[in-house]
Image (tube, rainbow, N blue to C red; front, side):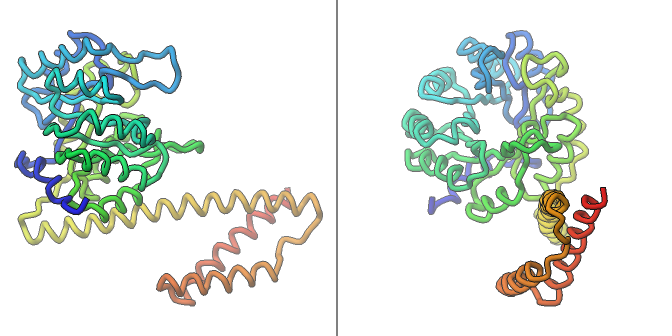
Length: 360
């Protein structure tokens, strides 16, 4: 994708004075529900009205969308409110129906992005369209898979492209529904700085109370917009009730977000500084998480040593680790003094954990 600057044209052409906003219900449930939410979002910062027509569910038996009938409701949204429309497509049939009903923006979900076969099928069906097409990251944290899906679309002649960061699945339970892995999104931006990148805090958090904080982090990391699921009665939504906000709450979120302008020199400095600090915050959080995992392993080692009546301190092992880490640190531009201090502190914490286990 050598000419990635062309991809930002569709966003630049909109000449927005705020981040791009895609909002609407997780699922189109009824015509009344779709139109009611749309009218509540009219005359707000929302640029595209989203609604899931086909809902890929983890397990069968859950609500899987109203199907093509919902596309007629989206047409009414456009006619009555003037809002442009957006929906997810997962195969050739979805694409053809969405194009026939003049949906303005199509996105490809994480479950589809994970399959090169599905991505190629969708790329072939979209060939030559001037519609905006956004690609969500795959379920697993695989940057090559994400970029590969976008490249298939670009090769098919689709120029109005963008990406959606919705977080990544993990077997570990965290405060997130899908862990953001911000560092991977940062790497994505570094590779393709001119490809519009949208954050989906609804799917990252799975919790409406966390949407503002994740949205702010995304904007601090120079994301171009937000996709936020919005429902007039979130508690009774037919899908993903916990992560949807009311239209009033969405307006408040957009009002409270700190968005830095690029035109003012001082604002530019603050924007860049906030971007760098946000990257550091992300990495610091990852360091704490990794250290926590390391200490859990130390607990396991302590239990094993207790069982076999083995001493906590293993000097040979410690010296091997320290020597290896000093060399590794030097290759990354870290001083020997820093590496020594850091790993001595880590080692002491590990000893404390093991001694606590042995004394129990």
